[in-house]
Amino acid sequence: MARIKPKQLLIQSKTKKAPTRISYSTIVTWNLIVILVVLSLYATYRHWHHRPMLETEMDLPRAEHVGRSEDSTKTSRPSYAVIDTAKGSITIEIYKDASADVVDRFVSLCKSDHFKGMPFRHVIKNFVIQGGDFDFNGAAQEWILKAKASGENALSPKHEAFMIGTTKNPNNKGFDLFITTAPIPDLNDKLVVFGQVINGQDIVQEIEEVDTDEHYQPKTPIGILNITLKQQALS
Image (cartoon, rainbow, N blue to C red; front, side):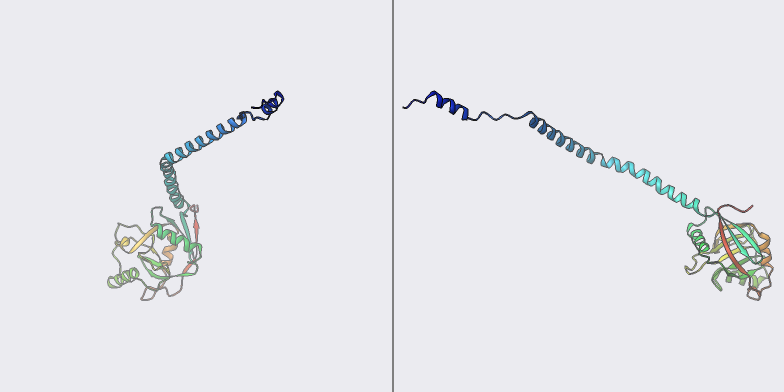
């Protein structure tokens, strides 16, 4: 067996690879990766664990917001309307607790000038004035027949005069207005009352005095010039 010379042993020892050492930066990097993975898993767990509680807490403000929206809708509705006629102006107060559907429809039609130029079709003295889209309807017809039969209509202190309303289940193509000039016993059975005249009762009475034919239609046309919505009553 040949002997290896010392010089060759030195060369071989230099060429042998030393064990690989892991650097400090590599250790820190992997530790950071592990920490981030753990934090991510923990955050995901907290999110799904607390989600039902968050949804429950969010439902309350959402319900409160809906309630506030409904209240704001009521408060944004005009409280008064001024009916201009050739005889003068009639101010009505719109009831806050009136039918929302009726009030919203009335307000919408006022804003679109629907009532401008609309005639008063029937004037029954000491009873009611009707203005609207219809030549005739159930409520007006029944009251007119009663007036013709007895010469007058029975009055009742249950309802005040100068109420304003519209027929129940009105035709969607139109909208008629009734202004009472005396208490009417079955008023709520025939009309949806949504307001009351607070100024201009004398104008209503002037319109009530116009000459009418046998069908209680004014011989000289008189009607609504315009209706203006107001948030506050005019002093």
